[in-house]
Length: 113
Length: 111
Image (cartoon, rainbow over the protein chains, first blue to last red):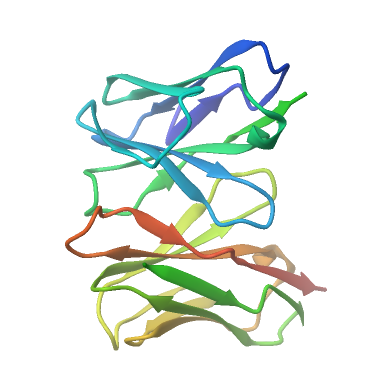
């Protein structure tokens, strides 16, 4: 595997389900990011981790819970989501936070029913 | 508040018809301006970073330029495979260092 990978690529879940999104980067980077991309809206930054430490939470509801066990892996745990949370969730990484270009994964298309 | 506005929202070109996409920005201090390309169903693909006014970067048929208020992405003699949504993002200096994205320009190049 190369670059940034995300699984699953598509996810349909009910509002009472619990699911997790996974991201893995194979670039040797130290910073990882979660973004939300909704139709007709700009990418919205959700969370940032730098060297496994969370450095930014962009006022994200608590039904989204990130986890970064090491610099290569990032998870987004989902529970009790709302239909308006349906979107493309993108993971990105960069060498360090704030100084380098970010490289994105292919995203997880989430549909909340 | 940092803001990025991209225009036009959508652009249709004939193959070989050159044009430019605009990215206007408002930021307290610019650390960097980034251009990405996004194909349907995929994540954004990094194209360029520009750091200071007057800087230019090129890649194949694409050329990005930067002034103090805006950036242009010039597409010379485009081909159908250049069809994509082009995203612009700015990063402010001295702040949270997060990228602020525009809504993008959807480019369609017809054969």
